[in-house]
Image (cartoon, rainbow, N blue to C red):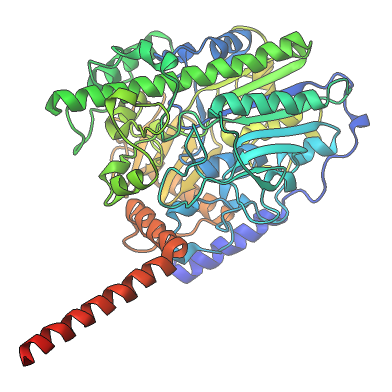
Length: 592
C-alpha cells in the first residue's frame, strides 16, 4: 500500500473513530445511587513500577502503602510512555490520537503540526471524566500539572472542572515560579482558567494538597459527592525536595545503578510481581558503569537518587494530609482512591545538551552536592538510574518497552476488598470507564477505548480483556500491541533500533528474548492488528530521519527565537555595526 493510501486509510479511520465519540453527557444525578462515592485520582509524574514501598521501592510511602492494603494493587497495569498522551487517555478513556494529544508539543515534528489528533490540546467534542461526573451532579476539582493545552478553552475550567489550580506546562520548578527547560519562557499557572501566581512560600506537593483541601471544603455540607484529580509534579525533573525528606537516603544508593537494578529485580520476583523466569536486561551501551565514575560524580549521582526518593516521600506525606482531612471530616469511608503514574522513570540528562548549563545559570539554578534538591538546585537521575529504577523491565519513559509503560496502580475504597492483588491486564484508558461505572454511570462508557475494571476489583471476573483482544499504543513512533501473553514492540532511536520485536510477557516480562524469528506467524498476525489500530486511530508515520532528541532541541530553539528574537536581532545589528565600524577604521588606518 502506498503512503498516500495509508494516509487516506488513517484519516478515514480517525474520522470514523471520532464519529463514535459520545454526543451527549450523562444526565441527571437522580438516575444514580444516593450513595455515590467520592473519587480521589492521584497521578504521580514519572514514577517507576517499583517506586512505591508496597511495590518494593526504597522510598518511604506509608500512605500509599496503607491505601494499597485497604484495597487492590495491580501488577499488570500500563500507561502510555509519555506524559500528555497518558493524561489525555486517563481523563477521557480514549486513545491518545483520538483526544488531540498524540504526543507532546516539545517533540512534535512540523509535518504533524495541526493534523487531526496532533493539535496538542483536547479537541472539540472530546469529553473528560470530569465533564461526565459534573453533569451527573459531582463537584469536580483539580490541582497540579495539566499539560493538555493552554489556549482559551483548553484549560480544566473548560473541561468539566468546577475549580482548578494548574500548571499548563510539562514541568516546572517545585520551589518557585521558574521554568525547567528552554522550551518555556515562564512557568504559567492558572486558577479557574485565569493566569495566576504562586505564593512566596511554595513547595509543589504541599501547595497542591493545600489547595485541593480548600476546594473540597468549599462544598462542605453539600450532599453532592466530589471528584478530586491531584496531579503531582513529583517526581518529574527538576527533582527537588526538602532536606528532611532526603537525608535519610544518604547511603541508600551508594552501591550504584547496577546494584539497584539487580536488587529490585530480586524483590519483584520475591513479591510475586513478576514470574520467577524473569530476567533483567543489562544496561545498554553507551550507559556508564558505576565504577567508571569519579568519586565526586558517584557522590553527586547517589545524592540525586536520594533526592528522587525524598521527593516521592514528601509527596506521600502531603497526600497523607489529604487522607487525614477526609478522615477528620467523615468523608474517607465513602471515598475511592486511585493512585498511579503517567509513565516510567525519566532518563533525560539535560546538562549534556549544548547550552543547558548556561540556561540554568541564567535562571538561578545550580547542580551542587551541598544543596541538591533544595531551592535553586537542579537535580535529575539520568538514563542509568532510570534503567535501574525501571527494573525488572527494559528501558524507561518515552519508550514502549515495559519500563516505559508498566507502572503501579492502586485502587481502594468502598466496595473494594482489602488486601487484594490482581495480575489482570489494565490500561490507562480503563480509568475513566472504571470511575464512571463505580459512580453508577456505566451506560456512559460504551464509546470509549478503555473498559471498566469494576468486575476485576469486585472479584466477579479475573480479567477485563480476553486473550484474543488487541490493545495498541503509539507515541512518536514508539509502538506496542498487546494480545494475550504476547507483546509486539517497536522502539525508535536512540535507545531502540526502529525494528519490530515480539515477546511472551508471561515468561519474559524483562523483554530479553525476541521471538520474532521463532514465531513469524504470531509476528505477522500482530503486525496486522497493529496496522488496524494505527489506521483506526489516525496514527501518522514519522518523517524520515526523525530523532526525538534533535526535535526537542529544534523546538526549544524555535521557542527561544520567539521569546527573544528581537533582542537577538538588536545584538546582531549592533554586532554587525561594530564589525563595519572596525573595518572602516582598519581601512582608514591603512590609507594613512
